[in-house]
Amino acid sequence: MTRTLLQEIAHQIFGGKTKSSHFRNKRSQDYEKVMYKMKQAAFENKKAYEIAKLRAKSKGWI
Image (cartoon, rainbow, N blue to C red; front, side, top):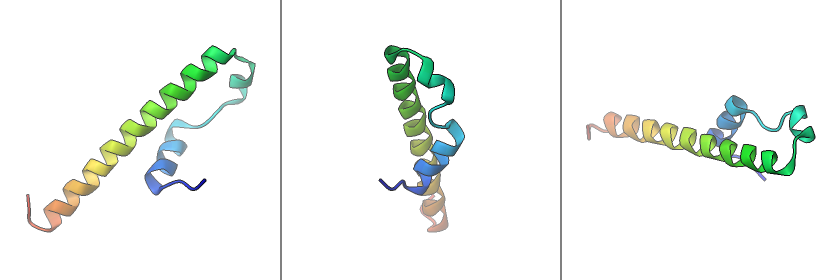
């Protein structure tokens, strides 16, 4: 599965699984996955908004 640039940046910032997560119970792992995806989505939305704003500004719309 390929990642977009924003997904890759978010992955680098928020990290993936850690070695310690292998020793935690299933519920904790599920929570970590949900929190990771929420943080990643928020980051991607923020960056997409900033990119759209810069494009609009460069075209003189703002």
